[in-house]
Image 1 (cartoon, rainbow, N blue to C red):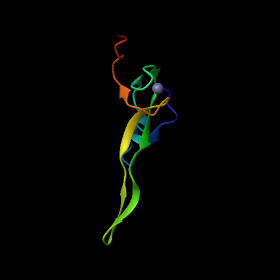
Image 2: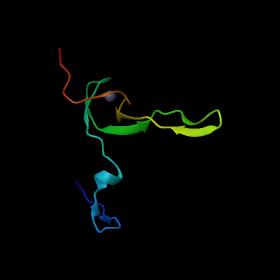
Image 3: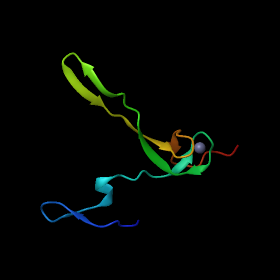
Length: 79
Ligand SMILES: [Zn+2]
């Protein structure tokens, strides 16, 4: 993994890249069955109002970079 420069928190502990932005693990695309990288998309509905409450709906899903479909952890059966 390439380090893009260390970041330190207030106590002097190093904050790793993984803590800042989680890099999703690749796998196999459920749609085209090819080995693929994964990315995280936000499927939430965004900002909404419920009565007097204003909130933001965030639902992060891991999807394949090629088809934005489910990422399988194991290679799909060829047959
Ligand atoms: Zn695909």
